[in-house]
Structure formats: C-alpha cells, structure tokens
Amino acid sequence: MKTTIIGIAGGSGSGKSTFTNRLKNFFGENITVIYHDNYYRANDKLSMEERRKINYDHPQALETDLLVKHLEKLKAGKSIKCPVYDFTQHNRSDKTITIHPSRVIVVEGILIFQDERLRDAFDIKIFVEADADERILRRVVRDMDERGRELQDIIEHYLATVKPMHYLYVEPTRNVADIVLNSGLNDVAFDVMKTKIESILENPDED
Ligand SMILES: Nc1ncnc2c1ncn2[C@@H]1O[C@H](COP(=O)(O)OP(=O)(O)O)[C@@H](O)[C@H]1O
Ligand SMILES: Nc1ccn([C@@H]2O[C@H](COP(=O)(O)O)[C@@H](O)[C@H]2O)c(=O)n1
Image (cartoon, rainbow, N blue to C red; front, side, top):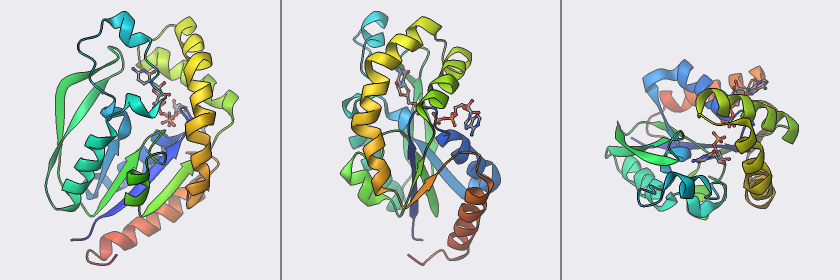
C-alpha cells in the first residue's frame, strides 16, 4: 500500500484544525491525522515558570526529528507511538497514542512547511490563511477555554514570540503550498479535498 501524506499548515488560529477535523470527521478511520503540536519537546527538568517562558513558535521547540522518523515508519507499514502534549502544563504528558499505517496521513501544524524533510515528505501542501486580528481573537477564546490560559499571558506571549515568529517562520512558507485556503470553513475547498482523498483511497497502489 502506498501512503499519501497531506500537510496542512497556517498561523496559529488560522483554522488548520477546523479544516483538518472536518476531513477527519468525514473520513473517520480511513485517514490518519498527526498534529505537530504533539511533538513539542518534553521539558520535565524545567519548572512551570521556566516552561512558560519558552519560545514555542520557534522550530527548535518541537521534536521534528521524531515526527520525521514516525512518518518514515508509517510509510514502511509500521505503527508508531505518538506523544501527547499537555498545553495546560506546557509539557509532554506521559500518554502516547498508537497510530497505525494508513493510505492517507494528514499532518497539521504551524511549522510543518518550515522543515525541509517534512516539506519533501508531503504529497499535497495546504496553507490556511486568516488575518492576524482574526487569528489572535480566536486564539484568545481558544486558549482561555481549552488551554488554561489567562488573557494577560496570552497577550504577552503573542506580542513577544507568536507574532514575530509567525512572520519569520510561518508566513513565508505560504509560498511552498500547493493550495492556499482563505478559511478552514471553506466548503468548496473541503469538497475539492474530499474528492481528492476519495480518489486516493480508491487507488491504494497509485502514487
Ligand atoms: N473561518 C472561521 N470563522 C470563525 N471561527 C473560526 C474560523 N476558523 C476557525 N475558527 C475558530 O477559531 C478557533 C481556532 O481555530 P483552529 O482551527 O483551532 O485554528 P488553528 O488550528 O489554525 O490554530 C476555533 O475555535 C475555531 O472554531
Ligand atoms: N506550551 C505551549 C506550546 C505551544 N503553544 C502555542 O501553540 C501554538 C500552535 O498551536 P495552534 O493549535 O495554535 O496552531 C503556537 O503558536 C504556540 O505559541 C502554547 O501556547 N503553549
């Protein structure tokens, strides 16, 4: 069985997970989704205060080597144990999720097109775009609801690292995308990708 890997990148709050989860909800077990966020490094030796200060929007904050190895294993037909990141603790949890090989793998993350090895691994590259004001407003709501953050912390973190790293490392990768979406809720884009994935699933041995 061949493996087709689809990368979905874009700034924080752009709608990457919204688009990815829509595909996952439609295709269920027929596709596999891997979140680069789960590959944020374990920082067990640092205190909570030290972990809060890390620049999580720099490529070095992520263990991308492990993700590259995991994609190679999945392509070779082997299962992997994917780490699970805990945003409330700014640390990797002690849980893992076993992921089995599948015909279509979707990889999502802000920095996935920044790494050359990942870029080369993707058969289809999608970049989800949204204005910076919309992204930060969405992020405030999400981080307070789901990631246990205070408003003041979100604002400081955004201005200190999220925004500058976005323009340094995320936004420039828009140019390597095959498809740029103006929203993770775009129905036409969803239909196009749905049709493409259906065709890939019907042809297990084609590139
Ligand atoms: N086009 C949109 N319009 C309104 N809200 C959106 C849109 N896209 C995403 N959202 C909301 O914004 C938040 C962040 O979206 P998400 O897909 O998690 O972003 P990302 O994965 O890129 O960080 C979520 O609560 C989501 O429901
Ligand atoms: N401990 C952490 C680790 C990462 N972040 C932020 O997550 C953002 C990426 O995830 P998205 O779902 O928003 O794409 C990134 O911008 C990091 O700043 C964090 O807040 N805390």
